[in-house]
Length: 78
Image (cartoon, rainbow, N blue to C red; front, side, top):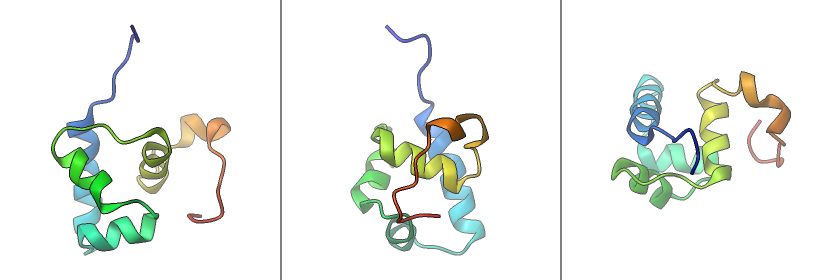
């Protein structure tokens, strides 16, 4: 068993706050990040995003500083 777990509710809260600051709808945010809208809906219900979606969200929130060695750009999001 892992010693850590993702606090999905907190991640969702932070994403929602940043989304609101930028005046984006959930659908527009998903499109900008190259994520499916269902990923964000699932998170809203407490479901964890997959690993690639998590990395995308961490980068978008500027929370990736500690994981930059593990983050590989795919050409979609800069």
